[in-house]
Amino acid sequence: MSVQLATANRLADGIVVFLGYDGEWTPHIDEARIAEREEDIAELVAEAEASPSVVGAYLIDAEIRLPEGQGRIVVPDSYREKIRAFGPSTHPAFAKKSVPEHFDPRTDVSAVFMDGI
Image 1 (cartoon, rainbow, N blue to C red):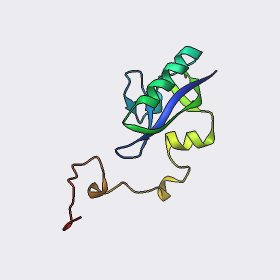
Image 2 (cartoon, rainbow, N blue to C red):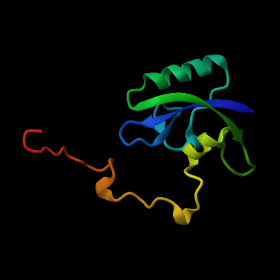
Image 3 (cartoon, rainbow, N blue to C red):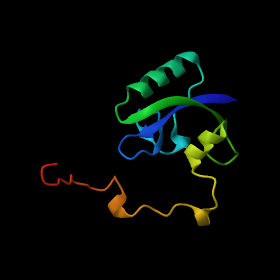
């Protein structure tokens, strides 16, 4: 069964996020709010587009899997959205290394001012 969920990019750091049941954006697709009915989809779109902390919110189609003995697994229908949700399709040995702390926008970064700029 295909369902829909809202995704966007967080303004603070650009990462892919999904709108959760609590109204907060989460980077984990398995925590995304699922909408199946027309009125739920309309409410999801309205809430996603009104959020000031993200950019480019839109709906994606996904499949819900319930493997025995495990929690809910959400799998996007399109390959593009699978890459957005789970990362690039490269071998881990060739994956991007972790971001050094001084480049991580989540760390405390104070403004840098140059003379007169």
